[in-house]
Length: 128
Image 1 (cartoon, rainbow, N blue to C red):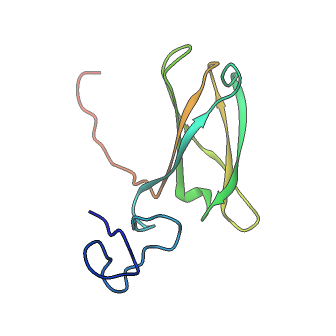
Image 2: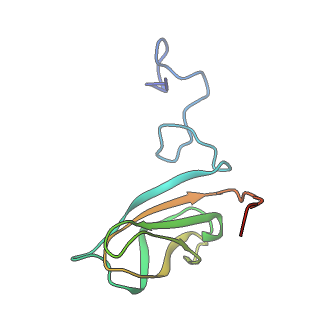
């Protein structure tokens, strides 16, 4: 159970000095740990058409796009597709402000943006 107040004392109060991260979240997650920072949908009338799309965030995410991973997923229309975005844009302050990606299909995409997603090393075995 999380603290329901950061000001008072008694049941539900935070421990002294723990007032949260100060970034609008009410649950503390270290910015050095992998976590989802944004999620949503890319959609348009009749879905997103195939081709290059450019997405610009209303408010840039703190830090360079190099520290984020953007994953798009589609499971309607012409089949399932998962896309990892590799072309990210930073604003003049060095904050992640958007991305561009080439997609296929004519439908909506779910979007997840992770920060500090670790890379796993795997060994694949089996008949090839």
